[in-house]
View 1: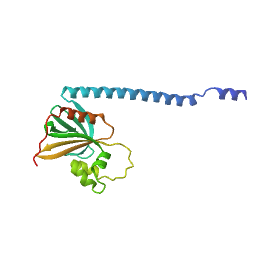
View 2: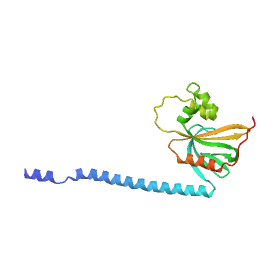
View 3: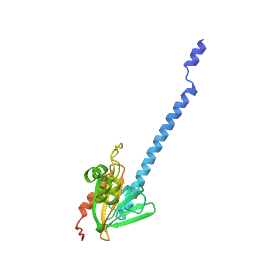
View 4: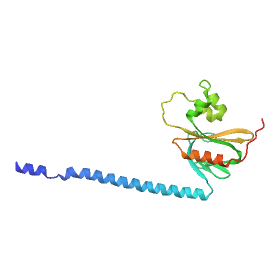
Length: 196
C-alpha cells in the first residue's frame, strides 16, 4: 500500500508533457504572429514611402460601389495625386483629372436614406442625388438588422457636360475618407459652371 501512495504522488511524465507542449506551441504562435505583424507593418511603410516618392498625397483602400467599369464590391486602391485620382483594382488603373471633379463627399448609408430619400420613392430619390450610387443605396430595404456603419466616398465629376459619380464604400470608420474630402476642399480653387 505504501508503494501505491508514493507512485501516485510522483509526477507522471505522460500527464505533464501535453500541457507543456501546448504552452510551447502557443508561445511559438504568438512569436510568429508578432514577427508577421512587424514584417507587414514594415512592408506597408515601404509601400507608402514608394507611393509618396511617386507623388501620391493620400492612398486609401475601399470597395467599389459604382461608377467604374468593374464589379460592385471589388477592392480598389484610391491614389490621390496633386492633379488626378487614380483608382487601381488588380491590374486595371483608371485616372480622373481633378479639374473635372466638382465634389468629393462622405455620406453614411443612413444619411443618404434619411435625408435625401423618401420612403415611397427610395430608388428614384437616390438616383436624383447620386445617380446609380444613390439609387442602389436609397433603394435598399428600410429595416436594418446590421449595426455596422457603412461610409461612402462619393466623387462627383463632369464628363462631356454630364454629371457623373464614382462611389466607394469603406467597411470600417475610415480616416482616409475624411482626409480625401479635406484635401479636395482645401485645394478647390475653381467653380464649375454648367450650361443648362
